[in-house]
Amino acid sequence: METQRQKKIAGVIQQDLVDILQRAATDGGLKGTLISVSKVSVTTDLSIAKVYVSIFPTKDAPALLEGIQSNQPLIKHELAQRTRNQLRRIPELSFFLDDSLEYIDGIDKSLKGGDNPIENPDLLDKRKKS
Image 1 (tube, rainbow, N blue to C red):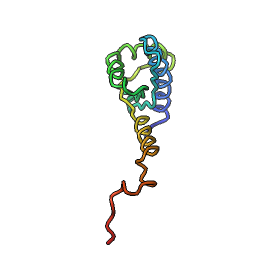
Image 2: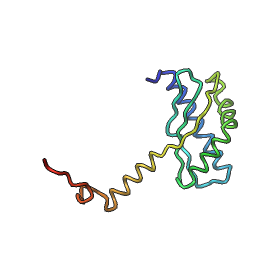
Image 3: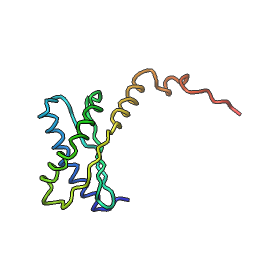
Image 4: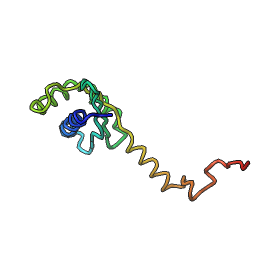
């Protein structure tokens, strides 16, 4: 169960990280790339923040995530500059890829394609009636 304080800190971090990451992508010459921070969760002792990012187009995601992870100290420093009036200590940032959009897209595609078990019941395994 997250405390109000954890939620508040996660919110502050999320807001600034979106800005930092999107600016870094644009400055890095990745004009058509969209980076969003879908979730930030902070540990109870406020020492670690798990940051879930979704990157579009998804084909660039693994390489970009690697770039974000290797620039973690720079990102943390930039975050510290922005939040110095709100946060005394910046948690360690761990970045993860949030593939829920890809997952949703996959479901959407299969429903639009012929993989819809409602319209095509042959896709489902036949259950034996006992």
